[in-house]
Image (spheres, helix red, strand yellow):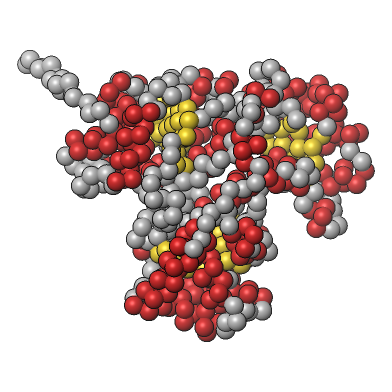
Length: 572
């Protein structure tokens, strides 16, 4: 029997702009790109093809996944490049690959889990630049990545990248984890001579007040230099067989360039800025494309990605005032006693069917789950339950997803969820940020980062122009942050208007009145149409201001330029 050779497809003619790639995909379910998407792609093709680092800003829900994937496919076809498209979580990898296949008719390969489990055919298609690879940050930022030689790296949700990228160079020793306990105790012994007695007690987990519990400090660099050998010895002795051995291998010979932070819960060792220029899979790419709904103007993107200079393409015309979807903000604590708020939350959950609750700690997570089980009997889901897929949650008529310490990566557009509770959020996500905020007074440095996290939290259920979601805000800090007129002026005009309307409607209200307003909003009928007109009128009078000192933070030499020459730059 004679086996015929495979027929190679004829060479394709590549268009002069990524926006036209979609028209060549016969399985697509959409007619074409939207005006603002086409504008971004044409600007990219005209001004940024050869730039080593490029940033694209597109508001949440405006279709940046389509923009990113069309640019990726265009470069793959035009230049024969290996393209890696990075997402923060496995859920978003699955979401992006699903959109590519089901909506755009574009064949891409998703990679999640261990590299040993990657399909041989998918690996070959990436290496031969036959398909774009979609994967998580951790698949690129690890000590032995399969994606070792990409030509183009596209970083989606770049605003959320800092912890994912820095993890490769972060040794986090948690006191409460059994596998870390011995190392934590050994490090505490090394650091004891450098701490006053009260702080050493705090480090070992003994405290009497709230101030003790939230304590954070940094070991002075000269002091760390004196005990560097002891730190190296105790970590060497304890990391074998744990996941800590991977970041330790990146830090061990560069302790002179690291900062050591301590708290009641953990010890954190890392450089000030992630030294991405030392990681060949990222630094060696011809181009890195950063996509985000909020890029900021103070150089924060450069600091969290370790890149000297990033070319920012302008926001599409009109999106400086146009928002995504409609949010109705409710601030129950402006009218109700604290004791009545849980009852209102339950009543709202009954009306909505499915709801999402964001909380800043595992303790609050467990409290909400217990309350739902006792009073409502709804099925509850945590972040791990919906990490790979949200279908188990959306398949329930009545359910509550309770997520702790997460701002991004869990999206519920359309009918997936119409009710979001934001019950307090921490301003910081790691000890370095906590130290800069609490001990160094560096709030200006992190203003945009904090704002971005708040915006990500309140936008989990409004992902497109047609979405609408009620956002119920409670807790200690977030209501003040969003309702404060002084902070509100730094927000997008549409969000300013939504917040002003929500504050007005939340004052001098009863629980029954708040529930009646929620019913009107969820019905999304003529009664809500009149309220929506009021929001639009408020939007027309709103002006977004820039945070102070943003030009100073972005100007001059970059963060890396200001650091000493070293394999891992990072001294304060």
